Length: 284
Image (cartoon, rainbow, N blue to C red; front, top):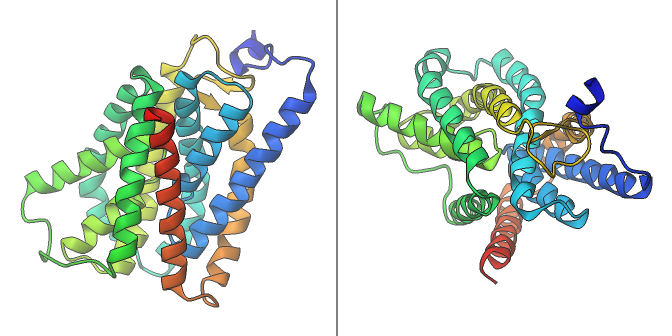
């Protein structure tokens, strides 16, 4: 019964397929962690599309690929956020007051987004990811530190509305929310360092309820691959976590020797290509 719950009973005799799977996921972890450290973005925005293509290569049904990729990415964010939060907190870069007041609408949005993501077709998640990835690519290409329009959230409606938005979209994309929350916070007057530090803590608020919702929503769904707990592929998460945690500091060190603008443009190109490929898969 335990093996069935963990998704191991479906394991076939062809180990070469699973070795390819684990090796490819390891590559995703290395790349995601490196870029997270280089650019200060969550590794999820790299890991999700890589996992999506891995699951496609091993023959997982199209309707399930994105859901598994999103759920697995969210699970890894729990661990990577812990490391990031510790570092930012030690430097006083987390706004505790903002974290307390913004966490509730974000958490509500996460649960709603994960429920929506588990119920809709996987192609809908692919469309959301491709659209937001393209937006982030454009934003990274043409913006600098962001445009400051306010000295704080203008009112509680904007604060709750933006929190719900960050939660819903992050849960549907499998990301920690930094790509969305940092531009919002800098626009309403928060210092970029405080915005990045607080966004790292928001990763917890997104990842824990998001991953758990996908676990429960995926119970009993046919066609899930081995090593699955609901939509969460726990073997993939176990492979990803240590590699992303090891590579993020490496990326952070490299960031000081490579022009940041060149890194931003390179990452924007990666996101634009990823977005175009997903749109092609959807409509091509």
